[in-house]
Length: 179
Image 1 (tube, rainbow, N blue to C red):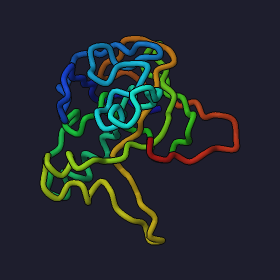
Image 2: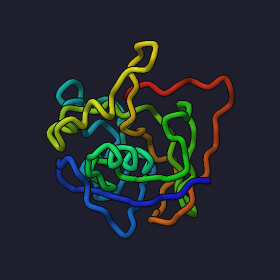
Image 3: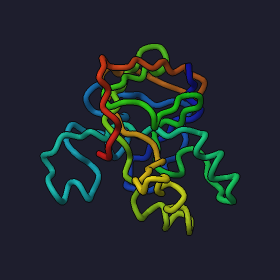
């Protein structure tokens, strides 16, 4: 089992999201009070393309182990600073398949929809950071490390210290792709 280490939200389009004592997930919508909450897309670039698209990016989760890695490389990154709503520890988020369900705290459940595709705002946040969260493996494949996106299936309040339980979908599993 994993653990939630921080929860964050912002009611405005800001790159970083301030940490909170708790956040409430709303079924089919996302994080209550967060600018990205909604049934249809809320990320500005996606709204410009097609505002009727379903919002597959309601809740952004990022593993604290990435923060550890970045801080060890000389960057200074804390929970919420890369735009995530939920910071986790002890769950290999990037290895989850599409459709995996994460039970967060006592009742909330999110379903993994895909990888976060890091944007240039990461570079604007700290010079050189984008190449740390997007790279290539030994075969030349793009590797995205900036967390995963999900939709809320069951709402509920979550807070730091809450447990995370992973429920895998039926096999065969589909690997995560950017959404």
